[in-house]
Length: 391
Ligand SMILES: *[C@@H]1O[C@H](CO)[C@@H](O)[C@H](O)[C@H]1NC(C)=O
Ligand SMILES: CC(=O)N[C@H]1CO[C@H](CO)[C@@H](O)[C@@H]1O
Image (cartoon, rainbow, N blue to C red; front, side, top):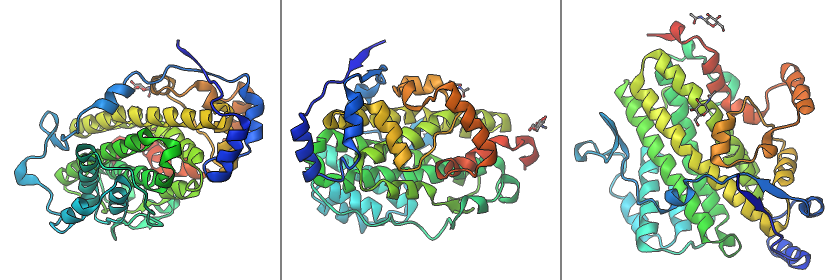
């Protein structure tokens, strides 16, 4: 196993000056990190596919054909992107402006398509990162109605068969993920000199992947006779994003390293449920999506370590301190092999046995936390007997 030793990159003086110039980047108690950084080392192998993913050509396989992903057939191009949108994309002159445009688009399919156009334009035309203010919250369609997690109907009361119910949930996660990634690009664009262009390239690429995933989910929902918006959804993913909008390290910890990593745990079980239900086409789509999410967790690990290096702090303790400060609780059961593959060191999230026992006791008595709540719908699907929900 490769052993990466973290070397302090910045002197304490430089670090302090960085802190005063870019306060929100490093607003945590740097001293508590530095005290542990001398002994810090990161025991993990980064995801082996990261470089290949970064160098991969634009992915045009936004349609799910009879045998898997393929380019959109001309006759079934979504009509929701009206011709007025494209001039806006072509007049934007930076990645940040393009991202803000995606965030301000409410129609889900248009958002998905614009997201791909934005990433493509940036890649092909070598546009600058630029700098732009993101909208306070991303534009969303009137439907689905956004409700609290407790008000999300159980599958049997949702009016959707279990496969469509699961797919609707996933579509909602993917639509949120498009906005989460673009918000990260746009919100932190004023700090591109500090963060480096690679940061923005990676998160715009993540947004492009998520937009393709949403397109597959939406297409499959339509094949099953449903639409995104046919049942209520919750707004928790965006709330986590909002909470961490002042601090790039927190954003990385909360979104790719907690939320998306949770997808690595839940994804394979979702696939099994769909296979059990007998919908192999949907299970293939979900399996492919779950597979592609590894890249996004790996990107999170990479940039979290990078930011910690700039702060001269130990990623493991920084990660734990951030979760504490932002009141985010880690939930198992973890899929260790998937997390290992994505390159998340176990000592970031795996608590010693004593703590785990304590947590198990807490689990029974305490209310679900927000991060858990956002996955509560997926978890509740897992505990439902799928046979009861067959149409
Ligand atoms: C863990 O994830 C891998 C994919 O990385 C999957 O093959 C495996 O079945 C998962 N294990 C469980 C228990 O879900
Ligand atoms: C029909 C069926 O699969 N029933 C299962 C429902 O789930 C309980 C446990 O939650 C099992 O014991 C049943 O066998």
